[in-house]
Image (cartoon, rainbow over all chains, first blue to last red; front, side, top):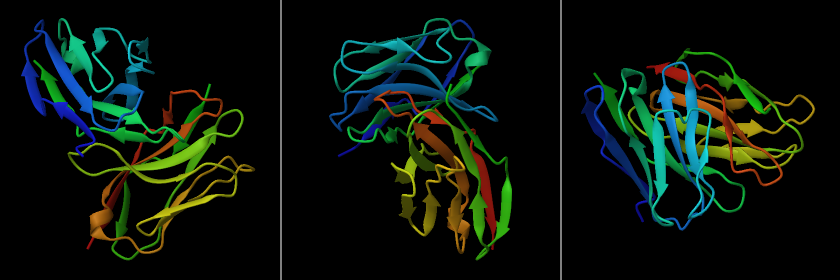
Length: 112
Length: 113
C-alpha cells in the first residue's frame, strides 16, 4: 500500500520548457489536490479535483493545467516553465470521514 | 474567509524542554482541526486531529485541545527530542462538506541535544 506517489522527485527545467508532474494514489479517495510550497509562504493550492472527471482552480492556478486521468491519477502540467515556478510541489488526497489530508513525498522543481 | 495563524519560527529548544506552538483560527461553524508535521525532504503527514469543541488530539507525546471559546488549537509536548525537529503546520477543514482545507504558514522547530 504505497499511499500517494509522485514522479519525478527532482527536476531542472530551462525557462520555456514544459513538463508534467505525475501523482497516483491507491487509497481509493475521491478528491486529489496539487499544492506548491515556497519558503515563508506555506502551502498554496494550485488545483484540486473533487471527484473523477472534475477539476477546479485553487489559489494560484496561473501557468498550470491539470488532468484527472482516472480515480487514481492526477497530473499537473507546466506548459511554459518560468523561474517563478521554482518550488516544491505536493500532491495530496483526503480521507472520507473528516477530510484529513494524505501527502506525497513532493517534486522539487528548479526553473533556470 | 477562513484563516489559520501560527506563531512564527524558528522555535529553538534544548532536548527535554517543554514545547508550545500556538495556533488560532477564524472560521464559521465547527471546523475540524489538524496538526501536520513535515520532516526535512518529506511531505506533510498528519500528526493529530480534533473534530469538535473540547476534543483533545494526541499522538507521539504531542497534544492539542480544540478550544472553541478562544478559537485555538495549540500544540504541546512535555519533553521534546532531537528527532522532533521538523516544520509543524496547523490546519482546518471547514464544516459543511467543503473540500478545501486552510493551512497555517508552518512553524519550524529545532531541538538541540
